Length: 638
Image 1 (tube, one colour):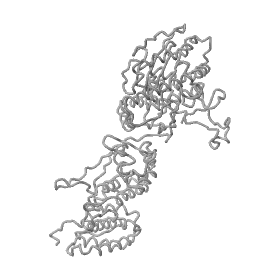
Image 2 (tube, rainbow, N blue to C red):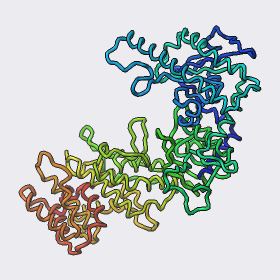
Image 3 (cartoon, rainbow, N blue to C red):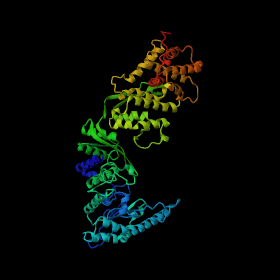
Image 4 (cartoon, helix red, strand yellow):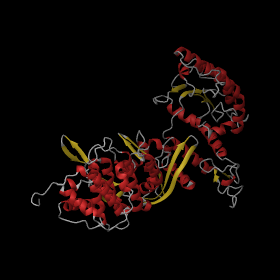
């Protein structure tokens, strides 16, 4: 994985040098550029905004010295806060260069640094007084640390008396109090909060010189352990802690328990990649295409052309539209998460071929007649059309996982295939939470890596049954059973896309099967046909249970009333349960209800004693499809 990232970064910088500057921004705070001549005299003591200093409030990027602020800051930035100790053991000064002195005004946790403890209910004037005192105290602390910082930074950068800029650098530090006194008089200084930075740079040393020194510092200090033959170990996802013996390669041919080391040039590439990653210059997940540098360049360009970050699905669509490609092949897909402890790898896998569009448009048919009553008229839901895998994610995954794994609300679109999920906020309770945790990686592999075998019919049946079960246990019946849209949508999905996960391409189209069963039940209710298959029995049983639940007059009627029927393992047990329910509600069933009589007689006399587990989908479909018992009588037969 590391080698692929190094090659990707190296080729990207060669093809697109500006990528290293993408989304760079200065730290919030003041940037002061000090010009000192060869004799150690401070030339620009009358500081002019836009020429000698500038202030960035974290929002307004229209400042004159924007590019200078970025470039000088980057040439003095630290590798990690832990490595700041090499310059200032107390970590009060955060720059890592003899050409810069950067610090913020944040007090330590106990307030000792600033000499001020947080107080509540203060007036504006009192707050300003406290902030002024805090800034003064912090400057005093930095002044105390400045001698060590100068000594350490000169040593690390090998600045000695014969250096061309030795006099100017020493004057930069000797004039610290004079410079600070001038800065304090500036209006913008009083705008600095505790997290804002005050950055002092010596501008009379060319920035190119400063960058070359800083690059050499990076090369020499990126490794976490001592070099061996010019190679070392990096902190970028390759750390080997000497305190964690179990992760050391004791049985390998490694040197000192470390199986792989990187060159200095590799270390710089990985450091550059990590910095760009933290600035969100790359999509997540990130495709790293082998031997197609132009594609990698287009991915990064498309992603950064937008003012707001775009989702991966949008990026892929734009890529295919722009390049006229129909597929993406031979690439690694890197998925990560940024945490306070750095980058955490979620998944890294090779994708031979990415399937964006399905072979043909898939219809989620409204076989259960989901819809609404509007102004006394029934309006059925329209069919959903799925053309590509991200339609599948947006429509299917969102619905079956109760808008939790894929969460869509207005313009917000979020997915959570790897992060923590709080069960408290999962619609559907523990059943849905466990379902998500069990299957979310399979859906990620199916959608993002085109692993079509990641899901199969058995898994899909388990997902859909338990997903519907969360609705059954939580939904309240407000009208007839047949009008619950949430459950009906899931049944529509179950039967419409079932064949996607079947290797048997000749399998009967399941959605058409429901339409056929619905018509068959009407025929049975009219006395024109008989139940002939286990699927017909299960569907008919569901129709009867739907009708019987409608007979209940309970004020808080819920779909939990279905659970006793779903727990029956054999069709004979289900028949007994239905018969007992008929006995309970016989007072509300008219003796003239011929359609009920015909359907119930067929269901209750079936002698197959079938296993109900594979038939549950048909039973539920029967429950939530238009009920044949309500079929209007045919006067010619009555």
